[in-house]
Image (tube, rainbow, N blue to C red; front, top):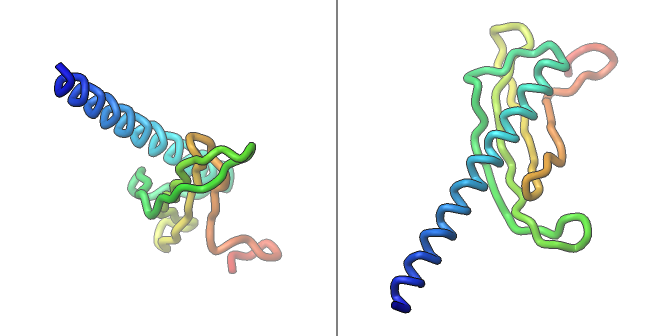
Length: 107
C-alpha cells in the first residue's frame, strides 16, 4: 500500500512539473510574440527555447523557478537576431530584444 502511495505521489509530482513547464513555455512564447508585434518585428520559427533555469528568491521572499527562454526574430526578413524572455515562476519578468534601438537606429 505504501509503495502505491509513493508511486502515485511521484507520478503526480512529475505531472505537475510537466504541466508547469508547458505553461511557462506558452507564456514565454506569448510574451515574445507580443514584443515582436509591438516593435513590428517578425518572430522566426514561432518558438522559444529554454536556455537556463535556476532557483531564486522572488518578490516577497518566496523561492521561485526562474526560467530564461531565447527566441529568434528579424527586423528585415533577412537578418536573424536573438531575444530573450525571463520568467519568475509563471510571471514574465522581462523581455529583451537585441540589438536595442539607439537614436532611432538599430545598434
